[in-house]
Length: 310
Image (cartoon, rainbow, N blue to C red):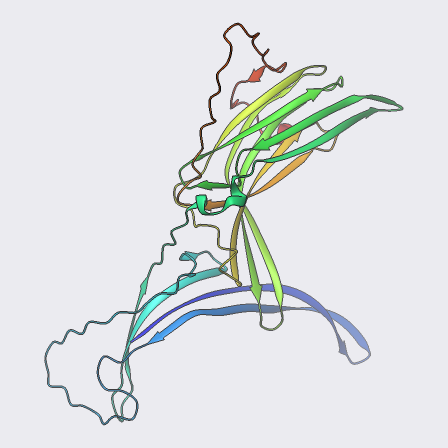
């Protein structure tokens, strides 16, 4: 019995080269196939017989044999797309003397249990800030300060990612809107015919929210859904097919200006980070109340916004 697991990738690229035809040179195209493969584990066991033993005659009939194989603790989760796969199988081989061996192969799925609470670094909030300036001909029209924050670096499948975007718009320009996306990145690494990497990125979830008018401030709060059926992040366990995730926030400045973009790498697992409630303190009832923040909170998503309108 053979129990094995492997990760593999394969893709093709069309390239050009110069070839000589007599005294002339021509440009021709050709296709290069890139491949990569790593054996994650390979377990072999003999149900009966073994190397060096004499053959055993088995009478006609139905036989059942029980076997077990220990799986390594750091196996990545099963995964499959067009250009790469992480797959596992059980293969039974019947060695018949003086004849072709009989084989049967059955795939099986590995699910990796990931508790995000085990990683202290994921509990640290992430914050990014950018100051966007606007110029109109020879005059500068103020700046817009954009502050984006996410409370954690890891989220469970089926949960929501809370995102907070603070706009302090000191310019006369209107911020058209806010686009928030959850994206998946798949990095393939080949070893044949040479070492090379290829990265594919796709958008899993996309939502839109309002921007802010000139000379105004606003806080935009979004909840980004994490799909329930997602492969856990596996960069720590894979070399050939690496799956990672990130949140991208794009602020639409209109056609004449470059849109600021924010990127937050996150880890996807199946048990989310548990929030620890803050320790309550005795507060004097007669103490003055802390004033609310100066920015009004914006409503969630506006369905009439589209990315092409940025």
